Length: 225
Image 1 (cartoon, rainbow, N blue to C red):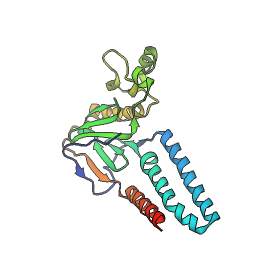
Image 2 (cartoon, rainbow, N blue to C red):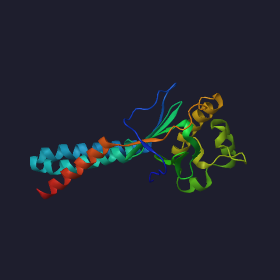
Image 3 (tube, rainbow, N blue to C red):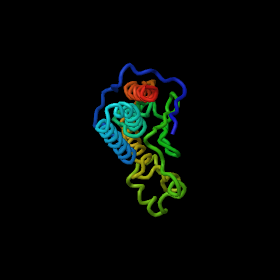
Image 4 (cartoon, rainbow, N blue to C red):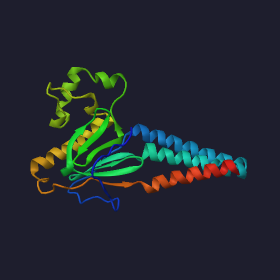
């Protein structure tokens, strides 16, 4: 799922966010993390085995396995969404976005969690909507109506049902519920009244990208040597 960003977005000078008044909730899908863990194990076992067989073979295998582990971290393990009382942080493979709740205008989940802001849109790589038949039909109508008590008011459609991508237990639904709950609470309490004009901030995930680059370089060197 590609990232989306348009309009005015200021560069973050660091990865820290504004002060929060409550607990920060982190939403990270378990499936990709498990897949990344499996890839880490495969990479580690391959390197150890290669060095046991022969040091030269080990050096040849080391680069590709570092690259494999780095890609697993970049694409699977690291992407997540954090939600506080005043901001939402979306960590995608290449960039991290920090969206103040005061800049938020809409939360959508049709294909993935999408935050509409004053500065454009931010799409969360880690919070995709359900796929396949479930994406088209969702749960049965009774279940979808029962789930109304577990989601914020803004997630309920005019006919009283909930979109399959907003249901609890889905990557997009869990993230959207956490954001909408904090957003609705902040608006009701008036906490956002004096915070207009706050920009979306973004920065490149340089450390993660750097490890991938190192893996690519080592892989190329091992092939050429």
